[in-house]
Length: 72
Image 1 (cartoon, helix red, strand yellow):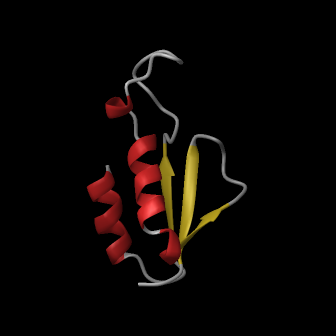
Image 2: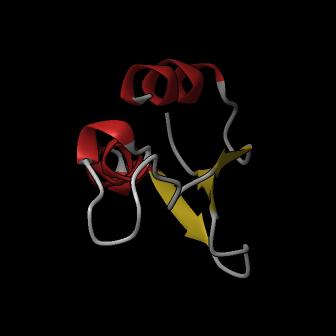
């Protein structure tokens, strides 16, 4: 998931929007989640690494996260 986000961001133009779905999805029940089986840690890591080159967009449903590319 992290590698997919990094490679996709490289192809995205400035002003382009990338949407991550299933942000809070997990195989396990709530409270017993294994972070290795969830997209959230990879998405969070991507956003933290590229925080100076993107903006997280508000108003998206809880299970989705959208970002706008600000710089290359």
